[in-house]
Length: 240
Image (cartoon, rainbow, N blue to C red):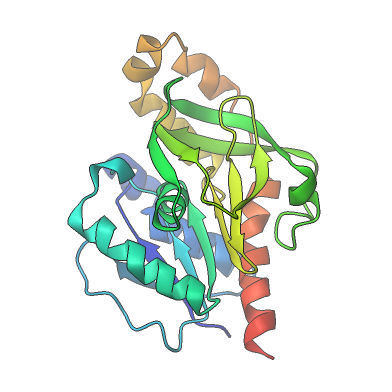
């Protein structure tokens, strides 16, 4: 089995944790469905681990904002650069997506159109259809999304793999084995609805109906499959 490390960058809402588990538990549960296990490193509380012996990193979402440049978050950037230089497999999710883009020379910050929340379709680019990780997905597929910040400018050399009407950079690849996605492959419909319930006022302020968005929440098996596909990619490389 490969040594997968979940880099925890934040906590879910208390009611989500109580009913469904924290971010790392959601990832572990999805991976366990295919027999994979993962260790957890809390980047806010623990010293940066040695990259030697690690086969793959999954960087979680967070309620923090990359543009706030908190010390623990800024410390992760050169560590992620070192991981990419080692060609270590990486998958950043939401905050992890924005953090990786920022670490590698792009820009992340508040989206000018506001928050994107709920189940929304994203579409693969031509490059995404040929990508070893995302290429097995349908050209258009549903995803769970909740974010106020986005990647505003991709790093030089990054490949855009997926987009939608709200966000031009829904998925990026930074190297042969380094990916990030704005959407949450680990979220279940129940978790997505719990997030929307928390955002009723914020969404109303930008002219959206959170209850209507709740009714449109669906399962997102294609997006969820990325986690197992990533673990399989890490395993295949580790066996060489």
